[in-house]
Image (cartoon, rainbow, N blue to C red; front, side, top):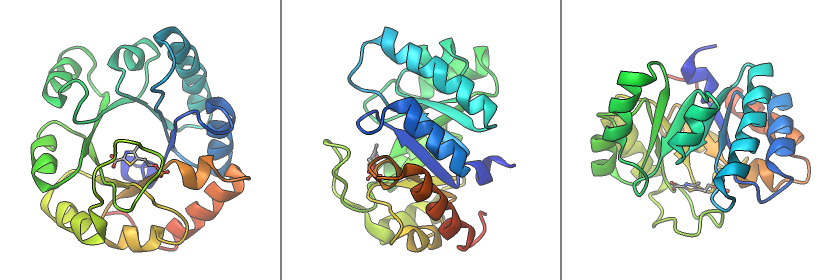
Length: 213
Ligand code: 3NM
């Protein structure tokens, strides 16, 4: 399966529902091929433990494992990739480290508008772009960029774009039509009563949308 196919549905676990491992395993069982660990509350030692277990799980399911923000933890558990936001370690610095010491590691960078996206794509293997719609999952999310904002970024950058923010079953097809490679979700899976079923339904909707490009 290609990288583009793997990031078509990108699940982020932030630990606020069902527990990281349980919800990640439900998503993996449904067929999700990219899991990101985004843990902002716990001490490093605990995040490391969770990351190690998620690394094992994602190996078993042949899925990508990406760690948010914590490059130290990503390296320690041999994650496939690291994802950084605009307030985290600079993408440029991480790119140099990856090229020098961790070749092949994936670098994802969040971008909230066209100028951030154009800067980030110099270093990133993919961009996380949003919030496309209002989200209550990220307290410090900026104003929404909407489908039009997403389209602008997707047509301007060369690296794959993963759209994020308020994406769910009712809008996923519209989001993919904007030209992005994949969609990232937290609540559409994690806050569902049945995360596995929810992930399966999202994958079906995605399967019926346009193919990745
Ligand atoms: N980053 P949900 S929005 C983690 O815009 C995150 O960069 C965003 O959660 C960004 O799928 C977001 O529940 C939260 O809306 C996504």
